[in-house]
Amino acid sequence: MKMIIAVVQDKDSHRLLNELVENNFGTTKLASTGGFLKSGNTTFMIGTEDERVDQAIQIIKHNCQSRSQLVSPVSPMGGNAESYVPYPVEIQVGGATIFILPVENFLQF
Image (cartoon, rainbow, N blue to C red; front, side, top):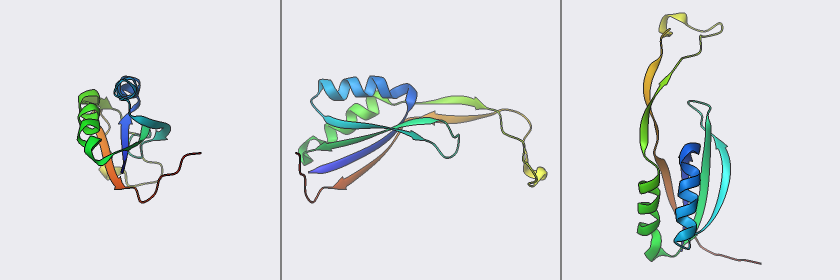
């Protein structure tokens, strides 16, 4: 058995949850916050049999695409102003970060 931990952008979470449920994956959905953009993310904890891991990864990949976004940097407060960029910067957001962990024991009450 494996535990898949997938961190996805909030915009993708509803669609991903629906498809995971349709394919009979038990999942726990947690609200989380990204460190770089300090924006909302959703973390899914998905417990599944070893032989279904690839199917779960494909579902995540299909529903969580990266996209470009313009971000306005925050001016430094008392920091080094030399490295400050005063105009919006285009970055890649979205997609998914996935961790797959072995499950030693599973109990359900």
